[in-house]
Amino acid sequence: MYRTHNNGQLRAADINKEVTLSGWVQKTRDKGFMVWVDLRDRYGITQLIFDEERTSKEVMDQCTKLGREFVIQVKGTVIERESKNPNMPTGDVEILVSELLILNESKTPPFTIEDETDGGEDLRMKYRYLDIRRKPVRENLIFRHKVAIAVRNYLSTEGFIEVETPYLIKSTPEGARDFVVPSRMNEGQFYALPQSPQTFKQLLMVGGLDKYFQIVKCFRDEDLRADRQPEFTQIDCEMAFVDQEDILNVFEGLTRHLLKEINGVEISEFPRITYDQAMAKYGNDKPDIRFGMEFGELNKVTQHKDFGVFNQAELVVGIAVPGGNRFTRKEIDKLIDWIKRPQVGALGMIYSRCNDDGTYKSSVDKFYDQEDLAKWAEVTDAKAGDLICVLSGDKNKVRTQLSALRMHLAEELGLRKSDEFAPLWVVDFPLLEWDEETERYHAMHHPFTSPKPGQLELLDTNPGEVKANAYDLVLNGNEIGGGSIRIHDKKTQALMFDYLGFTPEEANAQFGFLMDAFQYGAPPHGGLAFGLDRLVAILGGQETIRDFIAFPKNNSGRDVMIDAPAPIDAKQLEELNLAVTLSKK
Ligand code: ASP
Image (cartoon, rainbow, N blue to C red; front, side, top):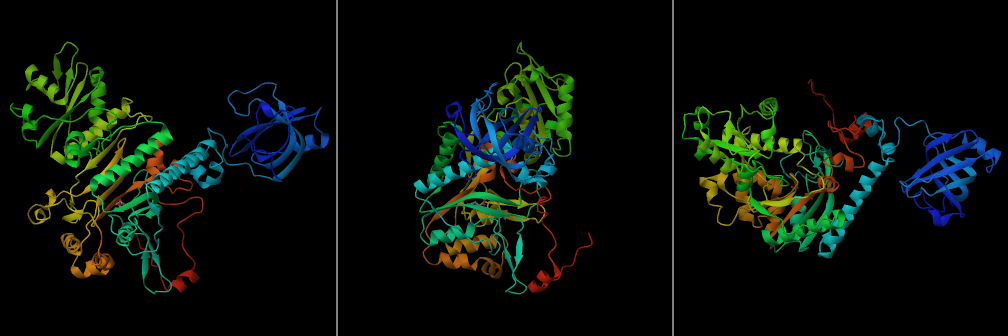
Protein backbone atom coordinates (compact mmCIF):
# COMPACT_ATOMS: atom_id res chain seq x y z
CA MET A 1 0.00 0.00 0.00
CA TYR A 2 1.47 3.34 -1.05
CA ARG A 3 -0.50 5.40 1.47
CA THR A 4 -2.94 5.18 4.31
CA HIS A 5 -3.88 8.87 4.03
CA ASN A 6 -3.41 11.65 1.56
CA ASN A 7 -1.42 14.79 2.30
CA GLY A 8 -4.39 17.01 3.02
CA GLN A 9 -6.06 14.70 5.48
CA LEU A 10 -4.37 14.45 8.86
CA ARG A 11 -5.60 16.54 11.80
CA ALA A 12 -5.00 16.82 15.55
CA ALA A 13 -7.47 13.95 16.08
CA ASP A 14 -5.04 11.65 14.25
CA ILE A 15 -2.15 12.24 16.69
CA ASN A 16 -0.34 9.00 17.63
CA LYS A 17 -1.57 7.16 14.52
CA GLU A 18 0.96 5.22 12.47
CA VAL A 19 0.57 6.36 8.87
CA THR A 20 2.06 5.86 5.43
CA LEU A 21 2.16 8.83 3.08
CA SER A 22 3.35 9.30 -0.49
CA GLY A 23 3.92 12.40 -2.54
CA TRP A 24 6.33 14.97 -3.89
CA VAL A 25 9.00 16.84 -1.93
CA GLN A 26 7.97 20.48 -2.19
CA LYS A 27 10.83 21.73 -0.03
CA THR A 28 13.21 20.67 2.70
CA ARG A 29 14.57 22.69 5.60
CA ASP A 30 17.75 21.14 6.93
CA LYS A 31 19.06 22.17 10.38
CA GLY A 32 21.49 19.22 10.50
CA PHE A 33 20.07 17.58 13.59
CA MET A 34 16.54 18.13 12.34
CA VAL A 35 15.11 18.14 8.82
CA TRP A 36 11.63 19.19 7.80
CA VAL A 37 10.09 18.21 4.49
CA ASP A 38 6.88 19.53 2.95
CA LEU A 39 5.23 16.55 1.27
CA ARG A 40 2.70 17.47 -1.42
CA ASP A 41 0.00 15.76 -3.43
CA ARG A 42 -3.26 16.84 -5.02
CA TYR A 43 -4.94 17.06 -1.64
CA GLY A 44 -2.50 19.26 0.21
CA ILE A 45 0.77 19.42 2.07
CA THR A 46 1.82 17.54 5.18
CA GLN A 47 4.98 18.37 7.08
CA LEU A 48 7.43 15.55 7.79
CA ILE A 49 10.03 15.76 10.50
CA PHE A 50 13.30 13.82 10.67
CA ASP A 51 14.88 14.23 14.10
CA GLU A 52 18.39 12.94 14.95
CA GLU A 53 17.20 11.92 18.42
CA ARG A 54 14.16 10.02 17.30
CA THR A 55 14.89 8.97 13.69
CA SER A 56 17.42 6.23 12.83
CA LYS A 57 20.81 7.28 11.43
CA GLU A 58 20.13 5.42 8.22
CA VAL A 59 16.91 7.37 7.55
CA MET A 60 18.61 10.65 8.61
CA ASP A 61 21.33 10.01 6.01
CA GLN A 62 18.82 9.09 3.38
CA CYS A 63 16.80 12.23 3.87
CA THR A 64 19.76 14.47 3.13
CA LYS A 65 19.63 13.12 -0.44
CA LEU A 66 16.13 14.41 -1.07
CA GLY A 67 15.76 17.06 -3.73
CA ARG A 68 12.80 19.10 -4.89
CA GLU A 69 10.08 17.02 -6.58
CA PHE A 70 11.51 13.65 -5.53
CA VAL A 71 8.66 11.16 -5.18
CA ILE A 72 8.83 9.48 -1.79
CA GLN A 73 6.95 7.20 0.53
CA VAL A 74 7.28 7.56 4.30
CA LYS A 75 6.06 5.66 7.31
CA GLY A 76 5.82 7.40 10.65
CA THR A 77 3.79 8.62 13.59
CA VAL A 78 1.46 11.60 13.59
CA ILE A 79 2.67 14.00 16.31
CA GLU A 80 1.59 17.42 17.49
CA ARG A 81 3.52 20.25 15.87
CA GLU A 82 5.43 22.53 18.16
CA SER A 83 4.78 25.63 16.07
CA LYS A 84 1.37 25.16 14.49
CA ASN A 85 0.44 26.68 11.15
CA PRO A 86 -3.16 27.91 11.21
CA ASN A 87 -3.01 28.62 7.46
CA MET A 88 -2.68 24.93 6.59
CA PRO A 89 -5.48 22.38 7.14
CA THR A 90 -2.80 19.92 8.30
CA GLY A 91 -0.97 22.63 10.23
CA ASP A 92 -1.55 21.16 13.71
CA VAL A 93 0.43 18.00 13.05
CA GLU A 94 3.59 16.61 11.52
CA ILE A 95 4.85 13.11 10.80
CA LEU A 96 7.83 11.84 12.74
CA VAL A 97 9.38 9.68 10.03
CA SER A 98 10.63 6.18 10.79
CA GLU A 99 11.00 4.82 7.24
CA LEU A 100 11.74 6.59 3.98
CA LEU A 101 11.61 5.14 0.49
CA ILE A 102 12.59 7.14 -2.58
CA LEU A 103 10.11 6.04 -5.26
CA ASN A 104 11.59 8.24 -7.96
CA GLU A 105 14.18 10.96 -8.21
CA SER A 106 13.61 14.25 -9.98
CA LYS A 107 15.76 16.66 -11.91
CA THR A 108 15.63 20.13 -10.42
CA PRO A 109 12.42 21.59 -11.89
CA PRO A 110 12.85 24.60 -14.20
CA PHE A 111 10.62 26.75 -12.00
CA THR A 112 9.43 26.67 -8.42
CA ILE A 113 6.32 24.61 -7.89
CA GLU A 114 4.64 26.94 -5.47
CA ASP A 115 1.49 29.08 -5.60
CA GLU A 116 3.62 32.05 -6.67
CA THR A 117 6.12 30.68 -9.14
CA ASP A 118 9.19 32.24 -10.70
CA GLY A 119 8.38 30.53 -14.02
CA GLY A 120 7.21 32.67 -16.95
CA GLU A 121 4.25 31.64 -19.12
CA ASP A 122 6.35 30.03 -21.87
CA LEU A 123 8.37 27.93 -19.49
CA ARG A 124 5.30 26.83 -17.57
CA MET A 125 3.58 25.80 -20.81
CA LYS A 126 6.61 23.79 -21.92
CA TYR A 127 6.54 21.91 -18.63
CA ARG A 128 2.78 22.08 -18.15
CA TYR A 129 2.78 18.77 -16.23
CA LEU A 130 4.88 20.51 -13.57
CA ASP A 131 2.69 23.61 -13.70
CA ILE A 132 -0.33 21.38 -13.03
CA ARG A 133 1.31 20.33 -9.75
CA ARG A 134 0.87 23.96 -8.63
CA LYS A 135 -2.20 24.58 -6.53
CA PRO A 136 -3.72 27.47 -8.55
CA VAL A 137 -3.60 25.46 -11.80
CA ARG A 138 -4.82 22.28 -10.13
CA GLU A 139 -7.68 24.15 -8.49
CA ASN A 140 -8.75 25.65 -11.82
CA LEU A 141 -8.94 22.17 -13.34
CA ILE A 142 -10.95 20.91 -10.39
CA PHE A 143 -13.21 23.95 -10.70
CA ARG A 144 -13.78 23.19 -14.38
CA HIS A 145 -14.67 19.62 -13.48
CA LYS A 146 -17.25 20.86 -10.97
CA VAL A 147 -18.87 23.13 -13.53
CA ALA A 148 -18.96 20.35 -16.13
CA ILE A 149 -20.54 17.91 -13.68
CA ALA A 150 -23.12 20.50 -12.59
CA VAL A 151 -24.00 21.08 -16.27
CA ARG A 152 -24.34 17.35 -16.94
CA ASN A 153 -26.48 16.77 -13.86
CA TYR A 154 -28.76 19.70 -14.57
CA LEU A 155 -29.34 18.89 -18.22
CA SER A 156 -29.74 15.19 -17.54
CA THR A 157 -32.36 15.97 -14.88
CA GLU A 158 -34.14 18.15 -17.44
CA GLY A 159 -34.36 15.17 -19.77
CA PHE A 160 -31.44 15.91 -22.09
CA ILE A 161 -29.44 12.99 -23.45
CA GLU A 162 -25.71 13.32 -24.05
CA VAL A 163 -24.91 11.99 -27.51
CA GLU A 164 -21.47 11.92 -29.08
CA THR A 165 -21.18 13.14 -32.64
CA PRO A 166 -18.26 12.43 -34.98
CA TYR A 167 -15.07 14.46 -35.21
CA LEU A 168 -14.18 13.37 -38.72
CA ILE A 169 -16.84 15.09 -40.77
CA LYS A 170 -17.47 17.32 -43.73
CA SER A 171 -17.15 21.05 -43.31
CA THR A 172 -19.87 22.94 -41.35
CA PRO A 173 -19.64 26.58 -42.29
CA GLU A 174 -19.75 28.63 -39.10
CA GLY A 175 -17.64 31.49 -40.23
CA ALA A 176 -14.19 30.07 -39.56
CA ARG A 177 -11.73 28.02 -41.56
CA ASP A 178 -11.82 24.24 -41.10
CA PHE A 179 -9.01 22.07 -39.85
CA VAL A 180 -8.74 19.24 -42.33
CA VAL A 181 -7.58 15.64 -42.06
CA PRO A 182 -6.47 13.68 -45.12
CA SER A 183 -8.10 10.32 -45.66
CA ARG A 184 -5.72 7.45 -46.40
CA MET A 185 -8.47 5.15 -47.59
CA ASN A 186 -10.04 7.74 -49.86
CA GLU A 187 -7.21 9.17 -51.86
CA GLY A 188 -7.26 12.91 -52.40
CA GLN A 189 -10.15 13.37 -49.98
CA PHE A 190 -10.29 15.10 -46.65
CA TYR A 191 -12.37 15.14 -43.55
CA ALA A 192 -12.97 18.41 -41.75
CA LEU A 193 -12.94 18.66 -37.98
CA PRO A 194 -16.25 20.10 -36.76
CA GLN A 195 -16.47 23.81 -36.04
CA SER A 196 -19.44 22.61 -34.00
CA PRO A 197 -21.77 19.59 -34.17
CA GLN A 198 -24.43 21.87 -35.71
CA THR A 199 -25.80 19.70 -38.50
CA PHE A 200 -25.53 16.51 -36.45
CA LYS A 201 -27.55 17.88 -33.59
CA GLN A 202 -30.21 18.99 -36.04
CA LEU A 203 -30.22 15.48 -37.49
CA LEU A 204 -30.64 14.09 -33.96
CA MET A 205 -33.82 16.18 -33.75
CA VAL A 206 -34.99 14.70 -37.05
CA GLY A 207 -34.12 11.39 -35.41
CA GLY A 208 -36.61 12.16 -32.66
CA LEU A 209 -34.22 12.44 -29.68
CA ASP A 210 -36.04 15.58 -28.60
CA LYS A 211 -33.44 16.95 -26.16
CA TYR A 212 -29.75 16.58 -26.89
CA PHE A 213 -26.63 17.91 -25.25
CA GLN A 214 -22.94 17.22 -25.48
CA ILE A 215 -19.85 18.64 -23.83
CA VAL A 216 -17.79 18.60 -26.97
CA LYS A 217 -14.58 19.78 -28.57
CA CYS A 218 -14.94 22.14 -31.53
CA PHE A 219 -12.18 23.15 -33.92
CA ARG A 220 -11.78 26.46 -35.74
CA ASP A 221 -8.74 27.48 -37.69
CA GLU A 222 -8.89 31.17 -36.90
CA ASP A 223 -6.19 33.72 -36.37
CA LEU A 224 -5.89 33.54 -32.64
CA ARG A 225 -6.97 36.82 -31.25
CA ALA A 226 -6.19 37.18 -27.58
CA ASP A 227 -7.63 34.38 -25.53
CA ARG A 228 -8.96 32.12 -28.25
CA GLN A 229 -7.98 28.50 -28.72
CA PRO A 230 -8.05 26.54 -31.99
CA GLU A 231 -9.77 23.71 -30.14
CA PHE A 232 -12.24 24.63 -27.47
CA THR A 233 -15.15 23.07 -25.63
CA GLN A 234 -18.83 23.76 -26.01
CA ILE A 235 -21.88 22.74 -24.06
CA ASP A 236 -23.86 22.02 -27.19
CA CYS A 237 -27.65 21.63 -27.02
CA GLU A 238 -30.66 21.15 -29.24
CA MET A 239 -34.37 20.73 -28.56
CA ALA A 240 -37.37 19.83 -30.73
CA PHE A 241 -40.88 21.33 -30.64
CA VAL A 242 -39.67 24.52 -29.03
CA ASP A 243 -39.77 28.19 -29.76
CA GLN A 244 -37.27 30.80 -28.67
CA GLU A 245 -39.00 31.34 -25.33
CA ASP A 246 -38.64 27.65 -24.38
CA ILE A 247 -34.94 27.66 -25.13
CA LEU A 248 -34.25 30.87 -23.24
CA ASN A 249 -36.08 29.50 -20.22
CA VAL A 250 -34.19 26.19 -20.11
CA PHE A 251 -30.76 27.76 -20.49
CA GLU A 252 -31.49 30.66 -18.20
CA GLY A 253 -32.38 27.92 -15.70
CA LEU A 254 -29.06 26.19 -16.31
CA THR A 255 -27.08 29.42 -15.91
CA ARG A 256 -28.97 30.37 -12.76
CA HIS A 257 -28.30 26.88 -11.38
CA LEU A 258 -24.57 27.18 -12.08
CA LEU A 259 -24.32 30.63 -10.52
CA LYS A 260 -26.03 29.31 -7.41
CA GLU A 261 -24.26 25.94 -7.22
CA ILE A 262 -20.79 27.16 -8.08
CA ASN A 263 -20.75 30.77 -6.89
CA GLY A 264 -23.54 30.86 -4.33
CA VAL A 265 -25.10 33.77 -6.20
CA GLU A 266 -28.85 33.97 -6.70
CA ILE A 267 -29.98 35.93 -9.71
CA SER A 268 -33.60 36.56 -10.59
CA GLU A 269 -34.84 36.83 -14.16
CA PHE A 270 -32.21 37.78 -16.72
CA PRO A 271 -32.90 41.02 -18.59
CA ARG A 272 -33.55 40.71 -22.32
CA ILE A 273 -32.71 43.34 -24.86
CA THR A 274 -32.78 43.32 -28.61
CA TYR A 275 -29.65 43.50 -30.69
CA ASP A 276 -30.71 46.97 -31.89
CA GLN A 277 -31.15 48.17 -28.32
CA ALA A 278 -27.79 46.71 -27.29
CA MET A 279 -26.07 48.52 -30.13
CA ALA A 280 -27.82 51.81 -29.36
CA LYS A 281 -27.30 51.64 -25.58
CA TYR A 282 -23.85 50.06 -25.38
CA GLY A 283 -22.46 50.05 -28.93
CA ASN A 284 -21.87 46.37 -28.46
CA ASP A 285 -23.82 43.13 -28.84
CA LYS A 286 -22.29 41.72 -25.68
CA PRO A 287 -22.65 44.56 -23.21
CA ASP A 288 -21.23 44.48 -19.73
CA ILE A 289 -24.13 45.67 -17.59
CA ARG A 290 -22.37 45.43 -14.23
CA PHE A 291 -22.13 49.21 -14.48
CA GLY A 292 -24.08 52.03 -16.17
CA MET A 293 -22.53 54.54 -18.58
CA GLU A 294 -25.28 53.87 -21.09
CA PHE A 295 -25.07 55.76 -24.36
CA GLY A 296 -27.09 58.92 -24.81
CA GLU A 297 -27.71 59.96 -28.42
CA LEU A 298 -27.13 63.67 -28.69
CA ASN A 299 -27.96 64.52 -32.32
CA LYS A 300 -31.12 66.39 -31.37
CA VAL A 301 -29.48 68.48 -28.70
CA THR A 302 -26.26 69.27 -30.57
CA GLN A 303 -27.08 69.75 -34.22
CA HIS A 304 -28.74 73.18 -33.88
CA LYS A 305 -25.53 75.19 -33.46
CA ASP A 306 -22.61 76.03 -35.74
CA PHE A 307 -20.38 73.18 -34.68
CA GLY A 308 -19.63 71.55 -38.03
CA VAL A 309 -18.07 68.40 -36.57
CA PHE A 310 -21.35 67.45 -34.91
CA ASN A 311 -23.60 68.78 -37.65
CA GLN A 312 -21.96 66.59 -40.27
CA ALA A 313 -22.00 63.47 -38.13
CA GLU A 314 -24.44 60.65 -38.62
CA LEU A 315 -24.36 60.03 -34.87
CA VAL A 316 -23.35 62.19 -31.91
CA VAL A 317 -23.29 60.03 -28.81
CA GLY A 318 -22.01 60.35 -25.27
CA ILE A 319 -21.58 58.62 -21.93
CA ALA A 320 -21.46 60.04 -18.43
CA VAL A 321 -18.38 58.83 -16.58
CA PRO A 322 -19.25 58.58 -12.88
CA GLY A 323 -17.04 60.92 -10.85
CA GLY A 324 -15.11 61.80 -14.02
CA ASN A 325 -15.07 65.52 -13.28
CA ARG A 326 -12.14 64.85 -10.99
CA PHE A 327 -9.99 63.89 -13.99
CA THR A 328 -7.27 66.45 -14.58
CA ARG A 329 -6.79 68.04 -17.99
CA LYS A 330 -3.79 65.76 -18.39
CA GLU A 331 -5.84 62.66 -17.62
CA ILE A 332 -8.48 63.70 -20.13
CA ASP A 333 -5.79 64.26 -22.76
CA LYS A 334 -4.56 60.74 -22.03
CA LEU A 335 -8.06 59.40 -22.63
CA ILE A 336 -8.22 61.27 -25.91
CA ASP A 337 -4.87 59.79 -26.95
CA TRP A 338 -6.19 56.37 -25.97
CA ILE A 339 -9.23 56.57 -28.25
CA LYS A 340 -7.15 58.00 -31.09
CA ARG A 341 -4.90 54.94 -31.15
CA PRO A 342 -5.34 53.00 -34.41
CA GLN A 343 -6.90 50.09 -32.47
CA VAL A 344 -9.83 52.35 -31.55
CA GLY A 345 -9.53 54.91 -34.32
CA ALA A 346 -11.61 57.87 -33.06
CA LEU A 347 -10.69 61.25 -34.50
CA GLY A 348 -11.16 63.08 -31.24
CA MET A 349 -13.41 63.53 -28.23
CA ILE A 350 -15.53 66.40 -26.95
CA TYR A 351 -16.23 66.54 -23.24
CA SER A 352 -18.29 68.43 -20.73
CA ARG A 353 -17.47 68.60 -17.02
CA CYS A 354 -20.45 68.48 -14.66
CA ASN A 355 -19.44 70.72 -11.79
CA ASP A 356 -20.70 70.20 -8.27
CA ASP A 357 -22.50 73.57 -8.34
CA GLY A 358 -24.65 72.42 -11.27
CA THR A 359 -22.72 74.35 -13.94
CA TYR A 360 -20.95 72.79 -16.93
CA LYS A 361 -17.60 73.40 -18.52
CA SER A 362 -17.14 71.86 -21.94
CA SER A 363 -14.39 71.71 -24.51
CA VAL A 364 -16.81 73.38 -26.95
CA ASP A 365 -18.07 76.29 -24.81
CA LYS A 366 -17.71 78.47 -27.90
CA PHE A 367 -20.67 76.69 -29.47
CA TYR A 368 -22.78 75.41 -26.61
CA ASP A 369 -24.18 77.35 -23.65
CA GLN A 370 -25.17 76.09 -20.18
CA GLU A 371 -28.69 75.32 -21.34
CA ASP A 372 -27.38 73.13 -24.17
CA LEU A 373 -24.97 71.35 -21.86
CA ALA A 374 -27.74 70.71 -19.33
CA LYS A 375 -29.55 68.83 -22.10
CA TRP A 376 -26.43 66.74 -22.78
CA ALA A 377 -26.42 65.84 -19.09
CA GLU A 378 -30.09 64.94 -19.20
CA VAL A 379 -29.68 62.68 -22.24
CA THR A 380 -26.59 60.90 -20.88
CA ASP A 381 -28.00 60.77 -17.36
CA ALA A 382 -24.99 62.66 -15.98
CA LYS A 383 -24.88 63.78 -12.35
CA ALA A 384 -22.87 66.54 -10.71
CA GLY A 385 -19.28 65.32 -10.52
CA ASP A 386 -19.47 63.31 -13.76
CA LEU A 387 -17.66 63.83 -17.03
CA ILE A 388 -19.60 63.56 -20.29
CA CYS A 389 -17.50 62.12 -23.12
CA VAL A 390 -18.90 62.62 -26.62
CA LEU A 391 -17.88 61.04 -29.91
CA SER A 392 -19.32 61.69 -33.35
CA GLY A 393 -19.17 60.36 -36.90
CA ASP A 394 -20.33 57.30 -38.81
CA LYS A 395 -22.92 55.49 -36.66
CA ASN A 396 -21.41 52.03 -36.57
CA LYS A 397 -17.84 53.20 -36.14
CA VAL A 398 -18.70 55.68 -33.40
CA ARG A 399 -20.67 53.10 -31.46
CA THR A 400 -17.74 50.69 -31.54
CA GLN A 401 -15.33 53.43 -30.46
CA LEU A 402 -17.51 54.65 -27.60
CA SER A 403 -18.05 51.06 -26.49
CA ALA A 404 -14.28 50.60 -26.33
CA LEU A 405 -13.98 53.79 -24.28
CA ARG A 406 -16.80 52.69 -21.96
CA MET A 407 -15.06 49.36 -21.26
CA HIS A 408 -11.67 51.03 -20.86
CA LEU A 409 -13.03 53.51 -18.33
CA ALA A 410 -14.93 50.80 -16.44
CA GLU A 411 -11.69 48.83 -16.16
CA GLU A 412 -9.76 51.89 -14.99
CA LEU A 413 -12.44 52.82 -12.46
CA GLY A 414 -12.62 49.27 -11.09
CA LEU A 415 -16.25 48.79 -12.16
CA ARG A 416 -15.70 45.34 -13.67
CA LYS A 417 -15.83 43.37 -10.45
CA SER A 418 -15.09 39.69 -10.92
CA ASP A 419 -17.36 38.60 -8.07
CA GLU A 420 -20.39 40.36 -9.56
CA PHE A 421 -22.44 38.58 -12.19
CA ALA A 422 -24.70 40.36 -14.64
CA PRO A 423 -26.18 38.03 -17.25
CA LEU A 424 -28.56 39.11 -19.99
CA TRP A 425 -30.06 37.82 -23.20
CA VAL A 426 -29.54 39.68 -26.43
CA VAL A 427 -32.27 38.68 -28.89
CA ASP A 428 -33.46 39.48 -32.41
CA PHE A 429 -30.09 39.47 -34.10
CA PRO A 430 -29.98 40.40 -37.79
CA LEU A 431 -30.12 37.33 -40.02
CA LEU A 432 -27.43 38.60 -42.35
CA GLU A 433 -24.31 40.66 -42.02
CA TRP A 434 -22.67 42.63 -44.81
CA ASP A 435 -19.08 41.65 -45.44
CA GLU A 436 -17.00 44.51 -46.82
CA GLU A 437 -14.27 42.24 -48.10
CA THR A 438 -16.36 39.85 -50.18
CA GLU A 439 -19.04 42.50 -50.78
CA ARG A 440 -21.88 40.20 -49.95
CA TYR A 441 -24.16 39.14 -47.15
CA HIS A 442 -23.14 36.35 -44.78
CA ALA A 443 -25.25 34.53 -42.21
CA MET A 444 -24.63 36.39 -38.96
CA HIS A 445 -25.10 33.23 -36.87
CA HIS A 446 -25.01 30.36 -39.36
CA PRO A 447 -26.97 29.38 -42.47
CA PHE A 448 -29.39 27.14 -40.54
CA THR A 449 -30.88 30.02 -38.55
CA SER A 450 -34.49 30.91 -39.29
CA PRO A 451 -35.70 34.43 -40.01
CA LYS A 452 -38.43 35.90 -37.80
CA PRO A 453 -41.85 34.88 -39.01
CA GLY A 454 -43.09 36.97 -41.91
CA GLN A 455 -39.69 38.52 -42.64
CA LEU A 456 -38.64 36.18 -45.40
CA GLU A 457 -40.07 38.56 -48.00
CA LEU A 458 -37.81 41.36 -46.77
CA LEU A 459 -34.84 39.34 -48.04
CA ASP A 460 -35.49 40.63 -51.54
CA THR A 461 -35.97 44.27 -50.68
CA ASN A 462 -33.95 44.94 -47.55
CA PRO A 463 -31.82 41.93 -46.56
CA GLY A 464 -29.88 43.82 -43.88
CA GLU A 465 -33.11 44.51 -41.99
CA VAL A 466 -34.25 40.90 -41.67
CA LYS A 467 -34.17 39.76 -38.07
CA ALA A 468 -33.41 36.20 -37.03
CA ASN A 469 -34.74 33.94 -34.31
CA ALA A 470 -31.27 34.13 -32.83
CA TYR A 471 -30.12 34.93 -29.32
CA ASP A 472 -26.96 35.21 -27.25
CA LEU A 473 -26.42 34.83 -23.56
CA VAL A 474 -24.02 37.49 -22.33
CA LEU A 475 -22.28 37.44 -18.96
CA ASN A 476 -20.12 40.29 -17.70
CA GLY A 477 -19.39 41.59 -21.19
CA ASN A 478 -18.64 38.19 -22.68
CA GLU A 479 -20.75 36.19 -25.08
CA ILE A 480 -20.96 32.86 -23.33
CA GLY A 481 -23.50 31.27 -25.60
CA GLY A 482 -25.59 31.69 -28.64
CA GLY A 483 -28.07 29.85 -30.75
CA SER A 484 -31.17 30.04 -32.85
CA ILE A 485 -34.42 28.49 -33.89
CA ARG A 486 -33.56 26.62 -37.07
CA ILE A 487 -35.05 26.38 -40.48
CA HIS A 488 -36.71 22.96 -40.64
CA ASP A 489 -38.08 22.77 -44.15
CA LYS A 490 -36.19 22.08 -47.31
CA LYS A 491 -37.66 24.98 -49.28
CA THR A 492 -36.67 27.70 -46.86
CA GLN A 493 -33.25 26.14 -46.31
CA ALA A 494 -32.65 26.03 -50.07
CA LEU A 495 -33.75 29.66 -50.33
CA MET A 496 -31.34 30.59 -47.55
CA PHE A 497 -28.43 28.87 -49.27
CA ASP A 498 -29.36 30.71 -52.44
CA TYR A 499 -29.26 34.09 -50.63
CA LEU A 500 -25.92 33.21 -49.18
CA GLY A 501 -24.55 32.69 -52.65
CA PHE A 502 -24.51 28.90 -52.93
CA THR A 503 -25.57 27.52 -56.31
CA PRO A 504 -28.13 24.69 -55.97
CA GLU A 505 -25.34 22.26 -56.92
CA GLU A 506 -22.99 23.59 -54.24
CA ALA A 507 -25.74 23.58 -51.62
CA ASN A 508 -26.58 20.05 -52.56
CA ALA A 509 -22.98 18.85 -52.52
CA GLN A 510 -22.35 20.36 -49.09
CA PHE A 511 -25.70 20.03 -47.35
CA GLY A 512 -27.71 17.58 -49.42
CA PHE A 513 -27.84 15.25 -46.41
CA LEU A 514 -29.53 17.90 -44.25
CA MET A 515 -32.04 18.96 -46.90
CA ASP A 516 -32.79 15.30 -47.62
CA ALA A 517 -33.47 14.75 -43.92
CA PHE A 518 -35.81 17.74 -43.87
CA GLN A 519 -38.03 15.86 -46.33
CA TYR A 520 -38.75 13.14 -43.79
CA GLY A 521 -40.76 14.93 -41.17
CA ALA A 522 -38.23 17.23 -39.52
CA PRO A 523 -39.75 18.71 -36.35
CA PRO A 524 -39.46 22.40 -35.54
CA HIS A 525 -36.28 22.71 -33.50
CA GLY A 526 -33.69 25.04 -32.10
CA GLY A 527 -30.78 25.15 -29.72
CA LEU A 528 -27.69 26.86 -28.57
CA ALA A 529 -24.14 26.30 -27.47
CA PHE A 530 -22.28 27.71 -24.49
CA GLY A 531 -18.52 28.12 -24.56
CA LEU A 532 -17.47 26.02 -21.59
CA ASP A 533 -13.94 27.41 -21.35
CA ARG A 534 -15.12 31.02 -21.12
CA LEU A 535 -18.03 30.19 -18.83
CA VAL A 536 -15.69 28.43 -16.41
CA ALA A 537 -13.20 31.30 -16.50
CA ILE A 538 -15.91 33.88 -15.73
CA LEU A 539 -17.48 31.80 -12.96
CA GLY A 540 -13.95 31.36 -11.63
CA GLY A 541 -13.59 35.14 -11.53
CA GLN A 542 -10.95 35.25 -14.25
CA GLU A 543 -10.96 36.12 -17.91
CA THR A 544 -8.23 33.97 -19.41
CA ILE A 545 -9.56 30.68 -20.70
CA ARG A 546 -6.04 29.28 -20.97
CA ASP A 547 -5.87 29.10 -17.18
CA PHE A 548 -8.72 26.60 -17.17
CA ILE A 549 -7.45 24.31 -19.94
CA ALA A 550 -5.09 21.51 -18.98
CA PHE A 551 -2.98 21.65 -22.12
CA PRO A 552 -3.67 24.90 -23.98
CA LYS A 553 -2.06 26.15 -27.17
CA ASN A 554 -0.19 29.42 -27.45
CA ASN A 555 -1.09 32.40 -29.64
CA SER A 556 0.45 30.78 -32.70
CA GLY A 557 -1.66 27.68 -32.17
CA ARG A 558 1.33 25.69 -30.93
CA ASP A 559 1.48 23.18 -28.15
CA VAL A 560 5.01 23.99 -26.96
CA MET A 561 5.12 20.97 -24.68
CA ILE A 562 4.63 18.26 -27.29
CA ASP A 563 5.88 20.58 -30.03
CA ALA A 564 2.89 20.43 -32.33
CA PRO A 565 2.11 21.01 -35.11
CA ALA A 566 5.09 19.25 -36.69
CA PRO A 567 6.01 17.82 -40.09
CA ILE A 568 5.06 14.18 -40.61
CA ASP A 569 7.52 11.70 -41.97
CA ALA A 570 7.89 10.70 -45.60
CA LYS A 571 6.34 7.30 -45.02
CA GLN A 572 3.16 8.80 -43.61
CA LEU A 573 2.94 11.19 -46.55
CA GLU A 574 3.43 8.31 -48.94
CA GLU A 575 0.65 6.31 -47.30
CA LEU A 576 -1.63 9.30 -47.66
CA ASN A 577 -0.50 9.87 -51.22
CA LEU A 578 0.28 13.45 -50.36
CA ALA A 579 3.16 15.69 -51.39
CA VAL A 580 3.99 18.79 -49.41
CA THR A 581 5.03 21.92 -51.22
CA LEU A 582 5.99 24.67 -48.82
CA SER A 583 4.89 28.15 -49.84
CA LYS A 584 7.69 30.65 -50.46
CA LYS A 585 6.16 33.15 -47.99
N1 ASP B 1 -23.44 25.82 -33.48
C1 ASP B 1 -23.59 27.15 -32.94
C2 ASP B 1 -22.24 27.67 -32.48
O1 ASP B 1 -21.31 26.92 -32.32
C3 ASP B 1 -24.49 27.21 -31.77
C4 ASP B 1 -25.90 26.92 -32.13
O2 ASP B 1 -26.48 27.55 -33.04
O3 ASP B 1 -26.46 26.05 -31.46
O4 ASP B 1 -22.10 28.86 -32.24
